[in-house]
Length: 332
Ligand code: ADP
Ligand code: MG
Image (cartoon, protein in one colour):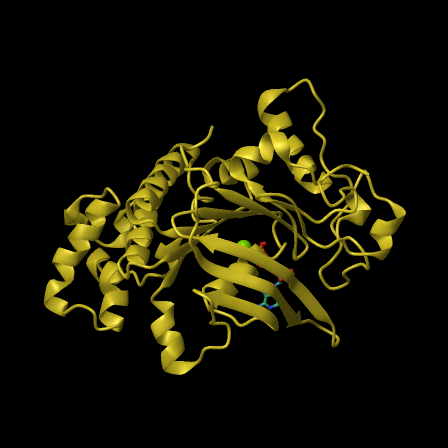
């Protein structure tokens, strides 16, 4: 299954670029946990960058820095060429209007005493962009945009289904007319059929409004179906970046391949043994020297234990961090 997304070869307008971003957290016993290590990724107008990887690999940490909820320890986050990673006070507040984030269940963050119109309009009121008297009309407009009845403006979120609440969360993210929206596992808690209608809505809204999306998800099949680019993350590092439509047939990194095998074996061939990855991922507290994937990699070589492979361009729109592949993507 793939959504009709426009291909990447046409001219692209860069909106946000993360350059060599690293984030560490203090852990017990004076140790440091590396949640995100030297990550460089780009977001383009009207395009979706999907990030996929196992739980705990650093997807949310990276995106929290992209949306200015946290500051990187190293690296830069350029928004239209300007580093926004160290903004403070009024400048930070002003900037935050341009990038929004939608979480797994945004309704959890909503006060149960707030009506849907208050939830949707809160960001606009905070920035004094509308008057209180305009709330209901604005909420109705955005409810219709997310394909909910305008009358939902007067309801409370707890009287709605999970899918409807997620639509309210999307409406709330849209009201500031941001240039980039990050969805953090935003459809992961929903039934597959509801998930499908929400993804359809997201694809439609993106085409209408030309918004850049960041889409975090641990479901490889879903991520590749709607992303123009997919970044595969492992233990805080980016392993491979490639067009969504090439993930199933053209991925090269042993980790991406293992994930693809896990997805497609399960769905398509029940006679084949499921090739799950054998050993555990190392802890982000003790990142090994060399490649982060070395202890689980079926193709691990001597150099992989010594040297961390850099993320390199091997083709237009295809980057890989793996010693198996040389400059032009030829296999060693
Ligand atoms: P993902 O979203 O891919 O599941 P996260 O970005 O949430 O991963 O977490 C990456 C790593 O960073 C995990 O080991 C997690 O425990 C750790 N981590 C995330 N946020 C914090 C924090 N505020 N303080 C300490 N450790 C954190
Ligand atoms: Mg997360």
